[in-house]
Length: 260
Image (cartoon, rainbow, N blue to C red):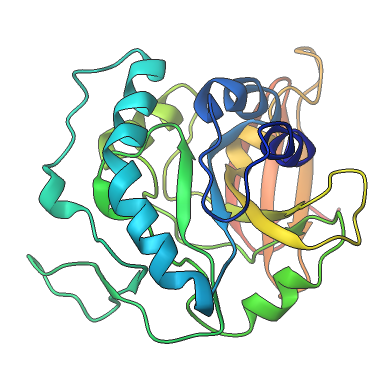
């Protein structure tokens, strides 16, 4: 999918980062379905010298982008807050925000930014555009050093990103004994300027959210039950699932399998 994104931009003779991928949502649907991913977003790499030009581009393009997303999703009546929620600048999370306060504020001066632009499914609020998800820690250097690799986050308490609480819960209601509180991870894949050259410049990062409740589904035939799977990562986290046929039932945090 990342390769098709870079090829699309090259075929139109456009220059990153001031691009918008046409039919991003439509082309993302099979990726979401096959990979059991809840949502994906494309974060453009914007260098500081291009920040002003990017922010002007986003102001001119964000309304058309949102309308196109909802038209393609076939849900033009989906509740979308007013244009006042759009930030005409690159933002960062406002972790100190209290009830009623803006959860995003203008980002600091940095040498590079990763504003989120394209989403699938369509976001439920304008303020997710221009959000620099990596405005913290050392993620920037790690992401820009990837070469056709995918990295995964630690398990995070993800409640909502591109969709409302109601929409997120509806996703989990389709799974047996699933909950939005169960483990979720984020994955990141680089988009290179030239798809065939993984040593070429990284121009964007494709990020996705996956719930293990969904990712572990369909692993066994229906008549095979009682298989325990313990998943652990390099962050020292352990989580246990019981696989009953096509369903993955979350047992809890830690290694909880029966050792007898």
